[in-house]
Image (cartoon, rainbow, N blue to C red; front, side, top):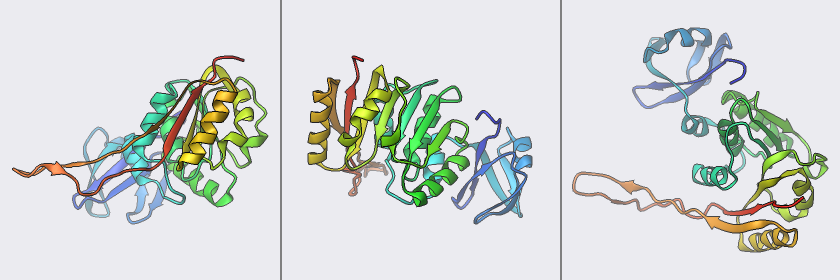
Length: 253
């Protein structure tokens, strides 16, 4: 990121994976031991490295690698919903995004990945325990130069016309929607991630009362296909309902 450091993934032959940040000197990695993180950059673009007598495949960590490696506390927003939020809110390089409810920071990391080094993410988290876990995940992902964490209530936000998109993962987003709308640029998007229909109805009704355009709600259902010789079929297990995605767009001051 801006610091020039990189997040790398070490994969062993038995399938174990470790995310390591370069440029942090000798660092103890849980389950791996002490690693000279400065030496790893010298190994690239070679594909293997030996650590403590074990061979690892070395690659730059991708967004799926980073999200798979985070330490979980509160329930995370899954990749299928992260992708929909990014597309539905028009989030891309250089954008400024406000997030309410950092949680374990899975969405935070995804948002930071897409806005890139020229973008900025501000994320609010009122729970100190969640905030501490999120900070560690954000640093490990190498997104701490892009993400600004505020350990406070988003209702205290006083900015105006600052953000291209606002994403709310909280039980009652309609209670802070006026504050969030003031912080949103004209043409920007608001999104609320909600688990129940009654929350969806209240949120969309409030958006429409406030003059939001393009209001709509989506639910993503995902099913894996198991591929085998002469036996390709849908998986018996399915990643079904995770949350409803409520979208609206601010089209007037």
